[in-house]
Image (cartoon, rainbow, N blue to C red; front, side, top):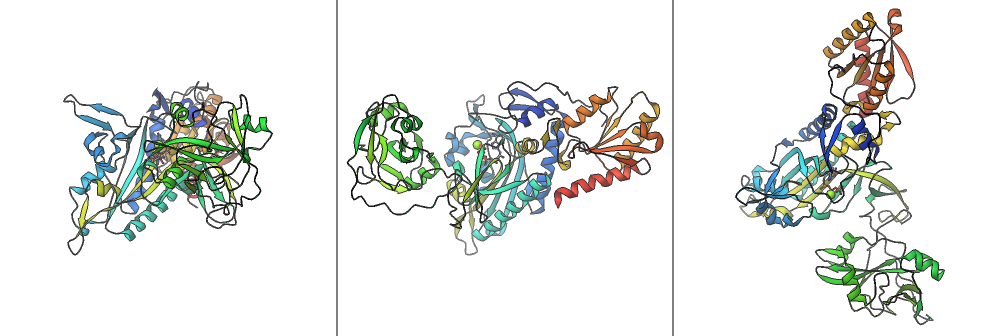
Length: 572
Ligand code: ATP
Ligand code: MG
């Protein structure tokens, strides 16, 4: 491509409202343009990167026997009714002219299961793995960070169909390994972590995280063994049995005017947050319940759901809190509370401070069981750095920030049962097909690569997904010999299969350097004064400030080899 013909409207200014560096650089480099909140158009450079990532994904999926399909964006409501997912909050809903209801596809388990149930009947037709790379639509409550969390985005979604658990295990591991290769080939350091299955359901599942400071997720890793989990999911070792009650002071109510938050109460009573209990009123399947955790901890709703065995748990609204506790929000406590009370495993001590269920008051010297009935103990708080590792028991968890770029699930028979996708075994008995699903955010991976690889001048794309592999800069566009040689080199590189950009624009050299750095061209060659003496200048975008000189003689071959070497670095 010649830069004089390339549509890449770069900007010098940092766009307003773009907080994340990937968002800023995607706009500034002319990769994407915003259309509406969380919705973007890809310009030529952006689409090129997108397609390079897609191609890597495709190659790795094909390598383990995946077959590419393409399902529609419009999904009839009835299909999602079959699994109960027509109520998922992020769905975009619409009607056709005959008032038939549709959703915009947010993931395609139901659509693919519908195809399979109508075509597969025997164990002989399994295993099957279908995948697509397609636009997904989700009305995310908080679209953010450009391509990191869009309302329209591209996902690779793969679906496996098997007749037995061992086959599911095999394809799950294939995907796990393929995901690792994909992220490695995209130049991304990743960590596979145990994760919460969320709305999708199923048993085993892993998230693939790109570790960067700007990540939304917290991951916890054991310093001693290879345990790694999303903090939302990480389990916590239950503390010792409840301590003896003997000699405990009677609990009493003290006045705490104006102290609502844990910090305010701690300051007022001159105690640490560790002896304060937060009583969190929730609604589980329509009924109020309380979850008790230490003042400096967070209630973990997915864990809470599992401990109480409910379908759904949400935080109660202010109305409900007032009704249940007869007090304003901020003063709920377990003593005298007439609803089921679930207590975090950690709260085995005595002399806690709790809300008094009246305005501006707290109760001190409170002990679980002695002062209020415990419906059940459980692991209901979110794990944090410093907790002991559940796997090895001796290691301590350390935290890091990550961006979730992929998520793979063993679904089991959840969808095939709901949708009657059955196969006959060798004896002719019918069983639900055993499924897995595998998601990878193509557009999010693109943005994550920038989060992981950039500097103050712009993007440092890993060469495998860069919009161009080599960029040629003509130092002085008015110099006939430089222009002519650049053209020859450009054509030779193209003949060698190198993806090359020739900056033939009539611009100052400084402008060209700035643009190449901004859009992240990995190998940059300058044709300048050295040409007469038989040399060119070469700089690598990933290495700062270093320039080397290469011979004009065989320059195209030298550069083509450098492209291979740079790619090999990512594969090693
Ligand atoms: P998140 O927790 O970030 O919302 P999710 O659990 O909803 O993600 P999945 O439904 O498992 O994600 O989707 C598979 C992959 O699609 C994710 O791992 C992520 O890479 C990508 N993805 C999901 N939602 C978005 C989004 N709004 N914008 C861009 N990519 C997304
Ligand atoms: Mg989501």
